[in-house]
Structures are given as structure tokens and as C-alpha cells.
Amino acid sequence: MSQTHKRTQVAIIGGGPSGLLLSQLLNLAGIDTVILERTSRARVLARIRAGVLESGTVDMLRAAGVADRLVAEGHTHSGCVFTDDDLMVRIDFTGLTGKAVMVYGQTEVTHDLYAAQDELGTPILHEVSDLVIHEATSSAPYLTYTHEGRAVRLDCDYVAGCDGFHGVSRQTIPAERRSEFERVYPFGWLGILSRTRPAHDELIYANSGSGFALASMRNANLSRYYVQVPLTDRVEDWSDEAFWDRLRACLPQDIRATLQTGPAIEKSIAPLRSFVCEPMRWGRLFLVGDAAHIVPPTGAKGLNLAVSDVFYLHQALISALRSGDTTGIDRYSDRALARIWQAMRFSWQLTNMLHRFDGEDSFAAQMRKASLMHLSQSETARRELAENYVGLPF
Image (cartoon, rainbow, N blue to C red):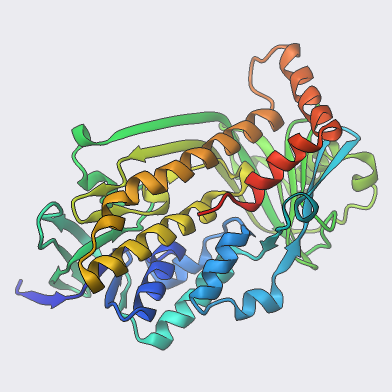
């Protein structure tokens, strides 16, 4: 098979939101990119993910010129609620930090980014296979892959690995040159999407004798709910009725009394894991988002951490390609990891505070209650939680 040769300045592996956002920002700065995605666009857009955006993430989307629909359709949340049985504690984000979060689905962010990239004419290749990264530590890296039955070589100046936990980018870094840190939690979140009125006007993180639950939403008539389940459970094990029964048992009486239920239009189980790979740079290859780190969804940090990676990397690449200044590139991994580990700590803390663990003793349950009581009594504790939830500075 003959090989087609192409060239770009930055090759981006992965057509999810982090790869699209990085490309959008680089394109606006006059830098050429090509995006390579192993699945179809329809499959990328079918992924149901979180929808809580930090204030810094919203600012980044504004800077990228893709925030019009977010501003029109997103829901600003100035706080959230933590509960333990019938005790409810509100965390006032705006009052404590002057900031808020935006509820706007990750799928919608991806739609907006695709539309913007299509308008700019960025090459986005889907269903790419056999992708290999070559000479990442040289001054002339390149990729080889197959697309539409043709073998292609893509020469580039830099490679951004935005291809997720199972992608090729992280595996390209030799095993002996990377350190991986992981904690796998012994439970998952069973989530449903339903065309129902949200249980509350703000997110509710519920701890109870029946386990953890999260009451969230996408809009005024579309709700997203989760309950804690063992990793051995399957979606098929849970009827809609069983899910609603469990959710009611986890929520305070005042909330469950007005809970609106309905058929699930999507149902899935997400395992919980904490994972970090160091370093996030190998020569001219950079890891972004889930390629380098995964957080439990408890703290709503997954997409937001990917956006902070993009913040550091797009600045670094612009400086390197415009003026030859590699300071940002040299500092990228350390800068990104400093913020990542803070988000890891926050997500780990919330996960332990809100979930029941198999085999735990009665002391653990009392500590969860004491943690929430501390939040109810200490403005300092509420402020610390709020600062982390709305997002630490980039």
C-alpha cells in the first residue's frame, strides 16, 4: 500500500472536547492542526458525561469563541447541597468565593466545539486506525495511520495526546520512564437520564444509610441522577422502578416527597477510579486530559482538569511555534500536575466522605456524619470546599 505524506504544526490525537478545544485555540492563534479520532463523530457525540463547568472552564470556552449557546442555555449554579439523611447543608459558592459553576452537558460542549472547528475548516479525521507515534523525542516527530483505506504519514512539530485512558499516547512513553498512581474504588455509579423536573434547583450530594446518591440536571426538564452500586452489578439488574426506590431512600424526606420520576432514556454504570501518569511530556509528545489522569466524578473535575491542561499547553505551543520560546513546554508537565494533584485530593476527599465502603465499621459512618456536621458549623470548611469546587486558579 502506497503511503500519503501530509504535514501540520500540531497533530492532535483524540476528537473529544480537550482535543477540539486545543485545536480551536491554536487555530485562532494561526497555528495549523489536524485532529485524528479512532471512532466516528456520532459515537463521540453519543458519550454521556458530566455537565458541571468550573468558572475557569467557562472563561476558556469564551476565549475560544464557543460560549454563545452555553450562555444562552446553560444554568448558573451559585451553590450545591450536601446531605446526610435529613440534614442538609448548602455550600454558597458565590457568597464564599465570588464565583459560580455552570451546568451544561459535556456533550453540548463537544457539539459546540465541532461546529466551531468545522467553520474554521480544521481537518478532523474519524475512524483512524493503526496509529503509531514515531520519533517523539526528536525534533521531527511524525505519525503513521490508516484512514479510509489509505496509509498516511503525518509530519508535525508537536503531538498532543488527547486520546483518553485507552489511547496510544500514554503507551508511547516507555514504561520505565513513566510513573502511574492509581486507586480503584470498590463501587460504581449507576446513572440515569430522565425527562423529568430536577429534584432541586441545585445539585444534591446525598449520603445516607442506603448509600450515596447525586441529584443533578441538564435543564429544567432533563434530570441526571446517580446511585452507588457494587462493581458486580450490571445495568440489566436495575429496573427503572428499582432505581427510583433506591434514589428516594438516599434523599432527605423533603426532597423525595416531591421527586418526579419517569422512564430512563439512558442508563449506565461508571466505575470510580483515581489515576495519574507522570510525566505528561515525552519529548514533543504531550498528554492531555484522560490520557494522563482520571478522577472520580464526585468532585466534577474530569472535563475541567482536561481544560486546565489545554490552558497550559496551548499557551506553551503558541510561544514555541511563534517565537521559539520553549519555557512553557519545559514547564507544562509540572504546571499541569500541580493542579491535577490538588483536584485528585479534593475528589478523593469527597469520595471518602460520601460513600459507604464494603466491610467498613460503624466508626466510618459516624465520621461521614461528623464531616457533614463540621461543614454545617464551619464557614472556613465551607469556603475551602467551595474554592475547590468552583475551581482553583489555572
